[in-house]
Length: 233
Image (cartoon, rainbow, N blue to C red):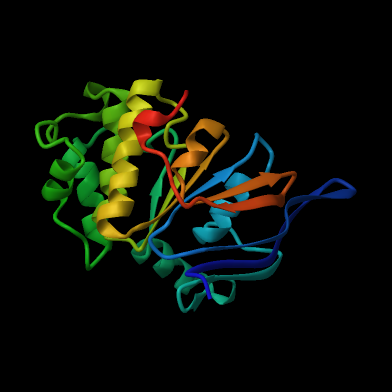
């Protein structure tokens, strides 16, 4: 069995007299240590799938497993623990605390995770050793995104979920962020899931899942992922 499995997962939202099927019998698997790209246009269901995988939302039906844990069977307390200990989140717009320095933002993870990594060392790993005492407003967009990645990594998660991590960045800065994510996957065997509408990013993945209208259109195993510098933006 794959490290991550979705089995006929549905997520429905009421909309007046009708129902919106944000995820419609979604099934796929992701292996441990893979970089997986979930690709689709706006409204395809990418964020819904990510929120279900990250325990931020509950499925209407179906089964989601991560390792030996059945996420869809977890109660609220266990879901909170799962989000806190096992999953790192990287958001499109960084979600940093603007009254805290870069290092203090990363240290937030240390306060909630007993097995957290050293925040200063993680900052150095993402290339921000000389920016630890800067506030977010003093950092570029790419630097803020790297702080966001460092905060997620400091939790020492088994699973890193990235919601359009390059969506607010120019191509050069986006390449730097993607290089960091691919290196983390390669060097630390972290399972990384990136959702994006940008098809140029897809060939980076070991696995590419294409969504449309809440359904899986295609799952491709990529035997030879390209290097970041080969992306045609």
